Amino acid sequence: MRRSEAEWRAALDPLAFRVLREHATERAGTSPLNREKRPGLYRCAGCGAPLFDAAAKFDSGTGWPSFTAPVQGRVGEREDNSLFMRRTEVHCADCGGHLGHVFPDGPPPTGLRYCINGAALAFEPAA
Image (cartoon, rainbow, N blue to C red; front, side, top):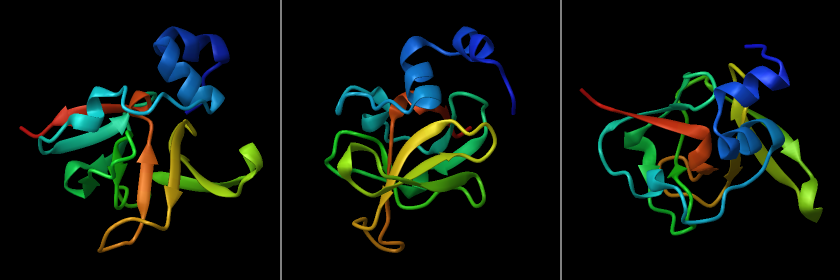
């Protein structure tokens, strides 16, 4: 999905724009999606692509929505060496929007923790 910066700014609220397009991080504990417990699907706030099933969500205690695994093929990864550390950034495979990072300290079955900015997500409750 290709949009100009002006089109992204018009389509997203200011926080979602900063997170998705400028790789910002929302403050911990500020997203209402961190407390969301219903079954459903978490979609990219930028393009609507399905990213995470609510069944993969868990409370990591970090203050950000966390998941054990993304929807197959919907999340890309790249090395992030900012802030004087090496991390793995995750982004929407469709629009390239920055979502957060993945860490190897999650629970079974994957042992991974996808730590995702709530501003990068839109929640769709199950029917």
